[in-house]
Image: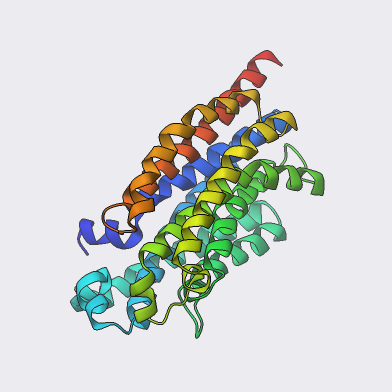
Length: 304
């Protein structure tokens, strides 16, 4: 398999978000406990990165396998256009899955059974997203489950492993962490919603009836706007509640710039034209939110 095909099927560039969630989790631990176990934390990061690539391989392969539209199978699907390499693609997919299992078991050995349960849930959601008789990505629950798994479950795993031998994660801390992640959850939800809105016609042809199909195209755009309003509204609320540091208030200054980026998308929902603009705005919000939280955590450590 050549490098270009591996990069496209693994969507390796998207693993930047895995590093971002790691920074978010480490910052949370320093804000709450003043410490973080980087040994188990970094091992968890490596597992998540390999798992992310495995899931992307799996989703691309299953989308091709379940597709009904011939144009999608031959002209859009990367797997379909590389049909002569199906055997190689499967071997790489299984190989990545094996790496995830081995490293995951090492993490479980170093920690406890909770790591195993969370890992199984995370991998399960990822695989069921595109597999089975009724894949999650063909239902109205895709946006919700994916946004929770990506923006909440992964940081929770990082925090649990980052507190090994240095702190205890109780129910109150878990609740604080979930609230801590909510702005990103709304934003990731909007990314999934945007993707499915752009792919609405193509999804219907392939038997995928997602949330935009259920609520209607115009309502999907309205929901997208509401999600972003909630994400920005939460920023000052979380500061007032002392969940996030004061540095995150700077994020509000990005609102006009991000909203103006969405205007072309509101006019036309085209995967190759306006979808990348939305993704750029989403990356700007997520990375800025996490970066400002990390700065707040550094300030607290220095001046504690």
